[in-house]
Image 1 (cartoon, rainbow, N blue to C red):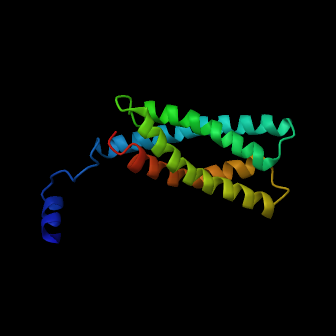
Image 2: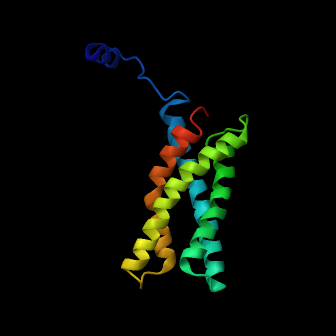
Amino acid sequence: MLSAMTQMADSGRARPSFASGGRRAELRRAALFLAVGGLGLAADAAIFSALQGLDASRPAARAASLACATLVTFALNRRYTFAATARRGGGDLARYAAVTLLAQGFSYALFLALSAAAPALPALAALVAAAAAATLLSFTGQRFFTFRGA
């Protein structure tokens, strides 16, 4: 088996690529995912800030802002990043919610830990740090579970 792989690499033939377009397509997906994530983060931060301005607690404001941001990113990622428009949305939404629950749960727990460990840290700094840490987990789950055939 190793010999066959070596021969293929040495023969100048193209290496096997991802099923849906190769390296360039995966880099494009990753870039779009980051752009959509940036828009989701902006929505998240804006909603969080608005709720904080209404005297909501940090945990309650963060939970509400995460839920809203998740709906924004689902719609954008489904349409643009993974181009899943021909598929039925219900199954995608359920899988997206499961992956998001895992990634956002990690983000939320990290946000709370940062807030407890460094109370002087601005809330938005903790929010951004936690969201950045969850990005790889989220992309991997969305790409290979939620939108696996897209």
